[in-house]
Amino acid sequence: MEVSIESPGEIVRRMTIKVPATELEKGVDARIVRFSRTAKIPGFRPGKVPRKVAEAQFGIQALHEAAQELIDISYRDALQEQAIVPVGMPSIEPKNLTRGETLEYTATIEVFPDIPRHDIKGKRVERPVCTVEDSDIDQTVETLRKRQTTWESTADVANEGDRVSVDFKGTVDGEPFEGGQAENYPAVIGSGGLLPEFESALAGTKADEQVTVALTFPEDYPSAELAGKAAEFAITVRDVGRPVLPEVDEDFIKALGISEGTSEAFRAEVRSNLERERDERVRSLLRQAVFDALLDGNDFPVPETLIEEEIERAIKATRAQLQQQGLPGDGDIDRTRYRDEAKRRVALGLVMNEFVKVRELQPRDDEVKAHLEKLASSYDDPQQVISWHYAERSRLGQIEALVVEEKAIQCLLEEAEVVDNEIRFSEFMNPAATGDTDAVSATE
Amino acid sequence: MNAERMHQVLLRPVVSEKSTNAAEANRQVVFEVLENATKAEVREAVEKLFDVSVTAVQVLNVRGKIKRFGKTPGKRNNWKKAYVRLAAGDDIDFLGSGA
Image (cartoon, rainbow over all chains, first blue to last red; front, side, top):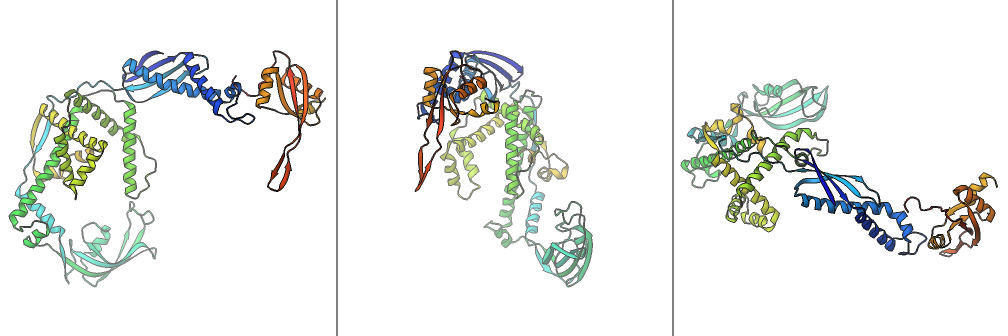
C-alpha cells in the first residue's frame, strides 16, 4: 500500500492510496470461487458452475466488492499510518479500478482544526447583579391575584377590563360561516382575545343589550377563507362582569400551597421563587457570555461535515416541533437558515472539547449524582428518574457531559475578568421591555 | 440460402455444463436450431453470422419431455440441437463481457 497526502484546504486532506494488483486479484478470485460453489445458474447443477461462466456472470460485481473491501481496509490502515483523525466519513473516488492493475483511489476527509485559543483569560464577561426588592414581590403578588380574578355581575355599562358574556352570530355576505357563532362566550374587553373592532363594540354595552358590528377580517387572519373579508356580527350581551381581585388573606395563601397561611411566609416564598428564577437567568446569561467570549476573535476553519450534521439535527428538531404543533413536518426546510447557528455551535463544541481535554476535566461521581438529583427533584418520582439515568451508559453520559460543561464554564469564568453589572430586577427579568437582546431564547 | 433464412436457422445458444465441457474439450459451440435446418445451413449461418470458420457440424433431435399438469398430460416441443466445431483460433463468446 502506498499513500500520498495533499492538503487542498486548511482542514481538508486528500489521500491518494495505491493497492497492488495482486491483492485485488486475490479478493476477486476468492469471490468468484465462492460464487461458483454456491450459485444456481440454469443449465448447471448447483455448485458445478465452471469458473469461466462464473467469471462472466459475476466478474464485475466481484471486482467491485473486492475493491470496496480493499478500500475500506487500506483507508483505515492509511489513517493509522499517517496518524490522521478524520471528521466523519471520507468521500472516496476510485481512480483506477481494473482487474490485474493497481487499485488506486483518493479519499478526501476533513480533519479537526487547530484551535488557536481555548480559554478566555483576560476577557471581559459581564455578570448581571440584582436583588429582589419588596416592590418586585408586590408585583408578583398582584399577578397572582389577577390570575384568580372572579367576575361580579353588574347592571352597569361594560368598560375596559370588564368581562362580557355574549352570544354572537357572524355572517359574511349574509351567509353564516364556520366558527362564527357562539353562545355565552366570555370576552374580556381590552385583552385582545378578539378582533379589536369586536371588543370596542362591546365596550359601553349593558346586560341584555343587542348590538351589530360590521368589521373586516385582517389580511393576516389565520383562516385564509376569512382573511380580508367583510363580516357582520349580531351580538347579544348576556352578562357584564366587573373584575374582583381576591384579598391576600389566609385562604388565598393556603390555596397557593403555603400551609402556614401567614403573609410573611407567603412573601418569603415568593421571594425565594423570584431569586431562583433570577439565579437561573444569571446562570444562562453567564453561560452565553462565556461562549461569546470563547468564540470572540477565535477564528479557525470549521469542518463542513460537522456543520452539515448539526444542520440536519436542527432540521430534525424543527420538524418534530412542527409535528407536535399539528403542522405538517415534512415540508421543505431552507437549510441555509440554520447554517450560521450550526456553525457557531460546532465551533463552540470544538473549543469546549479542546478546553476540557487540555484541563483534563472529568465528571466526578458525586458531582454527577448531585446534578442528577437536582434535575430529578422537579419530577414526581425523583428516585425513578435517577435510576433511569443510571440504568444505561448513554443516558448517564448525557448527564456527565452537562456536568463537565458546567465545570468548564466555572473554570473559564475564574480566568476571565468578570465585571458586575447592577441592574433592576424587573428590568433584568423582562429584557424585552428595556430593549435588551433576546440572548436567552437564542441559547436554549 | 438467402439472408432471411440464415438469420432464422440459429435459434439460441445452449449454455449448460455439457456445452461448456464441449467447448473446452473440443472447441465445439452448441446451438438450438430450427427443426428443419440442415448441417450445411447451420455451418453457413455460423460462419457468416459469427465470422468464424467451421470444421464440422453434428446435429441431433431432442425429444420434448412429457410433463403432466395434474391429470392433464402435456408434452414439450421437440427441438434440434447442433454441435458446431470451430477451426483452431476461432471462438464465440456467448457469455458476454468478462473472460
